[in-house]
Image (cartoon, rainbow, N blue to C red; front, top):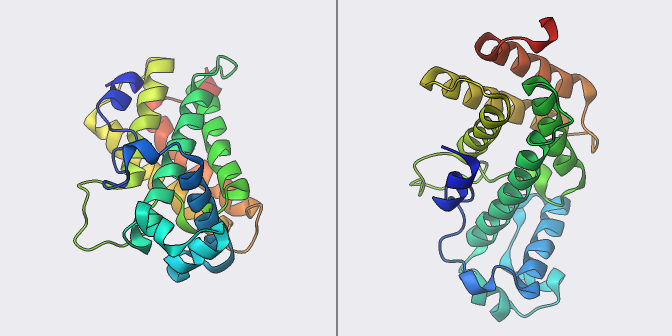
Length: 219
């Protein structure tokens, strides 16, 4: 499946908040509420976020918040969806960049996109793309990281003519889970990410994937 078809079929961003009004997605008011939520999460963590905090930080009434979001979980889901869509847009753009001569170069650049999101995107360190939100029963049949993995692998396969099988798809999803876990640990205490954990993540992921795609450094 191509990147274009992923978007057309709703795979990218398919885990977006279901009851977010379509006509409101691009409004300044909704963006302001999400920005306010992200700022609170940066300070307190997503577990302590309340709709009242979002309203206060945004300078809006609580009624305005409830006009868009039925509860705090809906706020978190919407913010996670925005994180997902923003990072995937940047990642796919980066992978398509002609300056990256090999799939390994492109993947390294894609990981830099996520590193910048951890560093600069308010609320990202705590919430990331939303898998930390433990909803029971789970409303989706896949994780957000699974969407990230499929999108990145599709972009890499298109750009570098990589063979994709069920085995490589699984390996790539494992790689993304490893990278996400180590990146989260890297940014737990250091706002710029502990270099040793970030490098360990890259080394582990690259070692896993070269078994499937070959090592271009040896060409």
